[in-house]
Image (tube, rainbow over all chains, first blue to last red; front, side, top):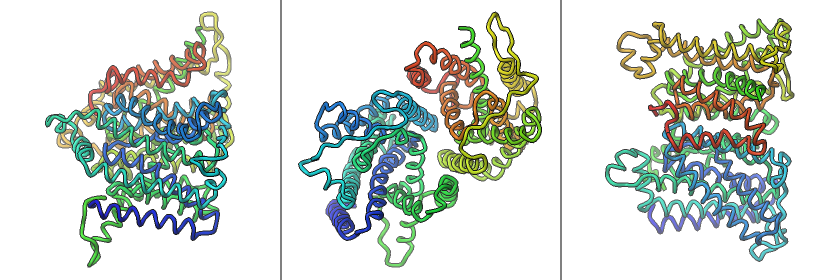
Length: 324
Length: 282
């Protein structure tokens, strides 16, 4: 997508967010959409890792939950202003991910996924068993100050404002990724993903770009974690649990990674389906498990891949273009 | 001191039984079975129901047999149909399976903790070098050792074992030599699943049955197979024992850091050898 078109779609998307946030009055629907937007950011992080590194993380909840915990703990000990705490949570997760990334992206293939699962689960066990700072299995509430970024927090926590915030962050993250990946960095990481050995032969140092993608994907996920902490005002070990990582991965697979917005589509579908399931929601694990298997077997490119194929197949449809 | 060593051995043996199944399936089908922990849990719960209606020894035989059947079906209607797909998507299929099995177990047996009584024939303490240990746990160690030895001998000296080793190295060439690799895979996946079920039934009398038992064990198992080297039985045996002992002693000496110890072991080994103790393939 060329630059003017990219900026145009960003503007349209942002305007759409404003329209929905101001036009929808049902608080339940607004909060459902907010949840979907926050998890869409989460899934974008996981999807980025799969798309640019070809790696599957089963432990990204680590960054989602840890960002929330960092904010909560920093606010509790009153070390820094809330805005700085949010920034530190994102930067800290990114830096931490870069460091462990330097070690674990060297692990080939599926062993990487198993490692991320193990690391994430350690964090879950650590947070739920240590009573002091993290409040153990009960979790801790986040004590937000009365004003954030010069705005009263109460206003910010209104359903429509939260949706607008989460949606705008989602759109801006997409824009940032689209801009970043159309350049040198995108080409470099794709070459490394497709054949690391050949990439090394032509003189690319593959470790740093791979670790950078891992760090970036963790940073995006931690952004979602900070938003979730703002939205719910609460952090618990559940936000670190592997099942949450699994749900995010499910969104990525269902949405597809051919296009950047695929994982976000997956998140939207997930939350809509969960809402529609209503009474059957206690069996959501089995239902989504079956859905996951069906999508992988019959639509390996995910829903976004299906959509693109439909658009291309229909007469007068948009000309094929490489992903956003 | 001795009791911790003993408990470490018990935990290590359980992990050996679990991880040998995981390693066998990986060796033949190149599938990391994320549902392996759930199969362990399903085996334990099946054992619970069977033991309720008859006794522990029947459960010890029947539950793994049922699991073997399930494993063979899983291979026939799952892994075999997906064998040309990229390994990542097969892994995700097993992840979907994990969700289905977890939901099934919670629906059938509920979320509360259950347990199987220790069989009466083994419910007595044994004096081991001055320390009292339950005879049942001693039997667990013996069973684990028998499984490890049996698998090693089978793979090393039997014709089927030779085929398994050949197919693990190169399934296509092995099939061209006239080995029915599909039947072999069904057998091996069945065996691996049965071992998961066996571990579940064996663990049930001293670890309670709960919906979280699968995720606890799968994390440990993954650490074991990654540290030991994917697909390597010997590597998994060593790593399982190491992890079992580390957890037993860690709980005593470094109680605050004990949950982090396996993680540190894993990072340490991977820094030193990214492919694990015995791994060469990816």
